[in-house]
View 1 (spheres, one colour):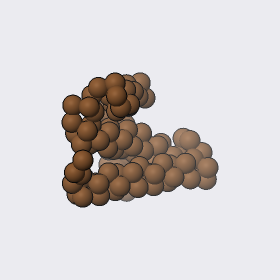
View 2 (cartoon, helix red, strand yellow; view 1 turned 135 degrees about the vertical axis):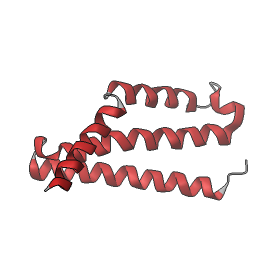
View 3 (cartoon, helix red, strand yellow; view 1 turned 180 degrees about the horizontal axis):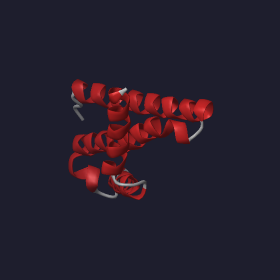
Length: 108
């Protein structure tokens, strides 16, 4: 397999971003409680599944037809990740929470 180095870099960057967003949200909850950390939680809930899905999608692309077969777990991972995005609440709800927080912060 010939993997484009740019794709590898993008996957690595997405993984680092997802981890950092999760750590920031968890830290905010630990320090301030859940209610005061809604913006950070919404940001993580919006971005992390999207980043995860993008990485899985790139892996499927690299594997070609085998990526959607039962030979690799990628098709299952994609379906499970997409389902999680829906089950956790629509992305629009998380984006709205983030936008409202930012608008309130900007109005001060």
